[in-house]
Image 1 (cartoon, rainbow, N blue to C red):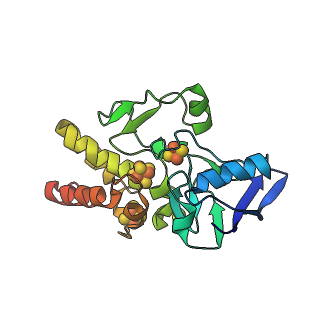
Image 2 (cartoon, rainbow, N blue to C red):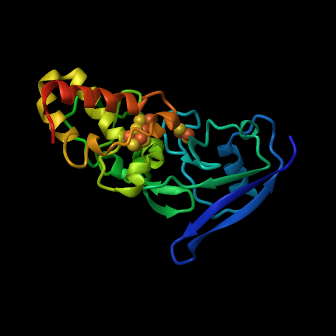
Image 3 (cartoon, protein in one colour):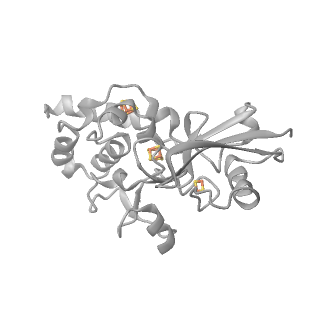
Length: 234
Ligand code: SF4
Ligand code: SF4
Ligand code: FES
């Protein structure tokens, strides 16, 4: 493969502050992913480069970032598939940025209740990942969501209104209702709150970027329909 330019948004509080782009040139192998490129740049060109990764196979969600303007998993995105000579990497939007491509995703969980049955203990992450994830002590996950944050970053409503519950949590609410119908009233009340489903503008950006097929917009539509059926309105 010919050489590529990897343009990375750098940020280090009080050192590279405000953020600025740095560009690195490399000649990748044909099957390299964006994560491979980041590893090579860190090893050979920029040891202070910050990004997050754990599983390397699209199951932990930690490597999510904005690649050529679209939220994707760095470990799953092949450089060759992007089809551009210059590849631009930025952190996810809407999350606190702590350095370069690293953000804290704890806000993904702020509206979830630990006793929801769709949340399951995560046996795969160790204390180091827990610390880096910034999620506190209760590591949990729901269904096939890998808590990557792509849907939240892509949602135009979250970008304007940080109070919006957001697509990942609304999906979890709908999952929980299906699994545990006795919780329906309480959950519909959360979904119908002023920061809930009614703020969704149906842009479907969340479903487009979700790497694991959760399709958050479908869950949000199901919630909306159920809310109308039961008369649970704000
Ligand atoms: S469908 Fe709703 S939640 Fe999904 S991106 Fe659009 S506004 Fe956000
Ligand atoms: S719903 Fe999809 S995009 Fe959103 S956090 Fe979960 S896996 Fe990521
Ligand atoms: S490193 Fe785990 S999803 Fe990419």
